[in-house]
Length: 82
Picture 1 (tube, rainbow, N blue to C red):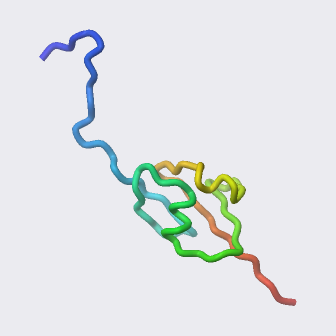
Picture 2 (picture 1 turned 90 degrees about the horizontal axis):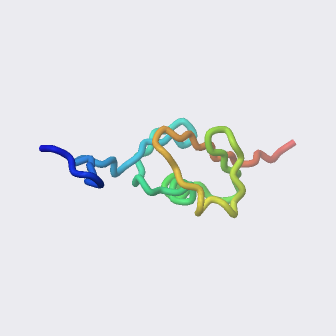
């Protein structure tokens, strides 16, 4: 088969999922997942802070922060006491 100009070549087996680590535990998520979706999958309750690949992410950005394969997410809860 010869290629014609502007002929698209598509991958017959696109990646539909991504593998990420959440607090060092492996999770498989949909390829279009956001940080907010990963947090929901993990099931953590506030208060907590989130970091993606060692970078703090403000809560206002959770829904718009897209994840990529092999991302590392840390969800950190405050520790109280004296």
